Length: 336
Image (tube, rainbow, N blue to C red; front, side, top):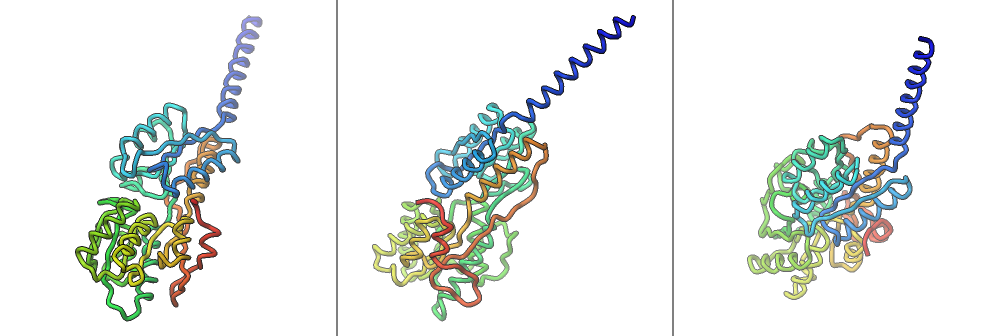
């Protein structure tokens, strides 16, 4: 009997050792983190990928990356989520191209224990992900709207907006923030629909320079007196400037934008863009990777919204509107 008990105790110790070894192996395994951006070519997402890779290397994590073929490619992002889950990613960072259509794929990943963090763009509903690390896009719009209103002085504004595409929350937040900052009443951060009060022409640019140029050309045909142009981002602003220059109006029209990429800040320095709201994609990505590594080690998920900051960049400071100059912008920009 004693011999039998000894054998049983030895077996129990062996089983316990296997269990402990298994737990230790799991805890010491290299964390796998996925990053899915809207595109691979936009400098904003290039910098985001750079920041994620740098932080992953620093923390000893393996980074998987993927992107849609173009802004709005939901199917490509869905496939990327599925591939990353299959490859063992326990955290996925994503900039959603379609804030609503991506939700079912995210839900499937989360049901398998994957922590999902949205970067830059929220999902609809926001609760579809564990957390959001992003610019306050409404505040980014507010800043350039306030600046533009002051810069116009006593001139009667004739506004064109070169937006993203219908329904995207980032596009709505920046557009509405600009108008609220410019002085349009009744708009708040929770306004869900695009407000066009006081807008002479609104066109979608998809954040693309060529499409931004076409959109500006269309607006000038609709109303040649346009003298203020809000753009969703700096590539669209560059396209707008080309259209204005071709029409001989580049010196009489004020352009404001959002991004703070190096090309955009150089355009502020060169007088192409009057002011831009700078955001920080590297910070979003590095924070996301750090949260993913912590989740892998401790099982603790992040939650809620983290504001990653925004700064107005202009070389023509306006009283009452906090800003930094182009030198600051170039020291903190991203892209080429």
